[in-house]
Each structure stands twice: as C-alpha cells, then as structure tokens.
Length: 497
Image (cartoon, rainbow, N blue to C red):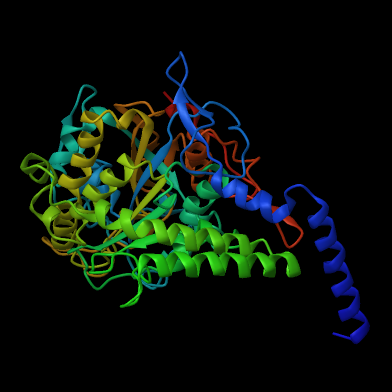
C-alpha cells in the first residue's frame, strides 16, 4: 500500500473514532450492549411460541421473529454415512421377489452412479434380509432392526421422499449442514445462533457432540468445518463437547491462575480489544470479547451439564447400558436432553459408521443397535418432561443406499452404494404432525413417486418452525446476500401441525 493510501486510511479511522466519541454509545457500545441484551420465547393464548424480551441470554440479529415459532430449540441426530432406508424404513417386498435380477434401465434411467459401482456389469436387485412389521395407530412399516423406535412411531413424522444432488459423502454432508456442497458457508446451528441468539448466559447457543458407531468404526470421518461459522462472526460457531477430562478445549485455566487474576486479565483484554476496535472497526473484535466472557462463564456451567451421575436409574435404563459410557451415542443423547433443559438453542449430534458398502447386514445390525434405544428414549424423555412440545428432534443422514448390491451378492451378504435419489428421515416434537408418513417411492425403492422433499425444503421448513423466514435471514458477504437455503427451498406445509 502506498504512503498516500496509508494516510487516507488513517484519516478515515480517525474520523470514525471522532464520530464514535461524539455518539452516546458508539458502535462498540452498541455491540457490547447487544451481547448483554436478550430475547426468549413465551406462549401466547393459542399456545404458540412468540419472542419477547427478558433477562437471560444474548440477542440475535433479528429484532423480532418473522412469524410465530412452533419450537424454540432443535436436537439434530445426524447419522453420518448414509443409513440404508431399505433396511430401516422403506419396506419394498418386490426387491426380495426379484432378488438377483438386474436393475431395469427404465428405473435407473441413466442416472449418475458413484465411481464405486459405475464399473459394474450388472446391478443385482437386493431386498432386506430383515423383517418389517406394521406399528402404531396407522400401521406404519418399520424394520425389526428398530424395535424401540417402532414403539414411538405415533410420535414421529417420517419423510420417505428426501432427495439431494450430492452423491459423495463430503459434499452431501456439507450440503445438509450448510446449504452448499462447497465448504465455507455457515452451518445451520450458526445461522440459528446468528438469527436468534441464546437463551442461556452460561452456555453457547450451538453445541456439538460426536460419537463413532460399531457398524463401521473406521469409516467416513467428519470435519470441524461442518459446525463452523463460515463468514459469520466466530461467536456463532458450534462448541464441541468431548468425552474427555476437559470436555471443551482451552476452557480451563492454567495451573496457578486465580479467579481474581482471570477476571482482571479478561477486563484488560476487553479494554485492549475495544481500543483495537476503535482503530480498525473490525466487528470480529467484539465477537472475541463475547467469546472470552462466555468461556469464563462456561468454566462453571460445562462441568455441571456434563455430569450425569445424579441421573436416576430409570433414566439410564431408558437410554440403555451405553448411556453410562462417555462418548457413546446413548451418552450423548442423554447429554442432549440436559442441554435442552438448559435452553441451548441448537444441539447437534453426529454419529458415524453408516457407510456400509459391503457386509451391510452385519454392519447395519450393530449400527442400528447403537442408536435405536437411545433415539427413542430421547423422544420419550423429552415428552415426559414437557419439553417435546417446544423441541424439534431430527434423525437422518446425508443420503440413502441403492436398491442393488455393490459387489458380489450372496445369500447372506451384500453391500449398497450411495443413493441420493430417495431416502428417509424422521422428525418428532413441536410443529410437526405425529404419526405421519410423508412421501412415497416406487416399488423398486429407487425413485420418488409422491411429495419429494429437497434438502433446501427441509432447511426452509426447519427455519420456519423456529419462527424464521428462510428468505429473510441473510448475511451480506463479498457483495452478495447469502442465506442457508441459497436461492431455493419451499416450506413443506403438509407436515406442519
């Protein structure tokens, strides 16, 4: 930069500083006051959640909700790897009748395949080795692999007609979490934090828990950018809680530091950051102040929320034996309920191990056992505590699996490749119709025949349930206004209660 340009930039900063000094609060003061201000939800006379002012939490960018909210928090049970809908939810007896026959070209219709099966000479159809039975008031078909989930089927809204364009794991997971197949966008939880803020002074608005399943324990990895803030301020990134001595990294004080010393250090850092903001006008500086303060408060709140030792025996029995083993899916589901009780806005669980290209019957049996009891227990636990009516629970992966076998098909073994054309997710809780099966696929389980739901439709509906118009929650970055649903997305009104 030339000397003339440097002088011009400095004069601009000086003028800005002079303006701020003459203002009653200044941008810095406004930012800090917004960190201290708050918003939470209460029920109106119709039992619908609305936003009001209160004394807890931090406010988001939205002054008011775009419309009445049906829920105020989300627990997203993301099943990473692509669970096979044909083994779990989408009963297709025709595949067993025509087992071993080649997939008709009229069904495939030249649709794109991954590099793992595109070279196969044949695509032998294969049905599930596991039985299906009807459950609940409406006789919903469910696999014997999910005995606990089958018992709560009347509480579930099952969408059989999900679809996506992404055919490989990384872009597909990224698409679901951020609305784009390309890395760099904010994830759903970050958009929630940005728009709505937090209802809790002592915990972040967006938390993340990870577990690794037994179906394919060394399978597809996950990346921290999946819960990243993208171009939003860093205070909106997800905070990962780990099954370790230090649940949140870099939270504990170094040996020898007192609380008084820590408080004095934070006050000095805030003063330095405020000077830095006045010089350069970078709003990320205010986010840094907020993060330091949140970390300070989390030193007390995190150990308390991570401690499940006081849970009664009947709760552990509900979630299963693994609930006492830190880092398991069952233990994380129990922690999700505790975080929901503390009004954490967005609770994201990732469970790995569903990428079953071979040995699917043996692998999916283990993987389903990992999640079945705990997922059902979470819904039941929230329900009995009165939390399900204002909580949305989501269960699903990034895509489904093919109706043909990847590799050699035998009497007892087969695998399935990625299939983005149709797959199943379920939702439970406030705002969605319980006991509903939405959408249909053809008899081959390959194409959608009724009520398709795209990834952006799912995201738009999720934001709608939180009181947000997905077209109005935007952030201007590099000259363009971005949103979670990019330039697409329609609310799936048929599933709304």
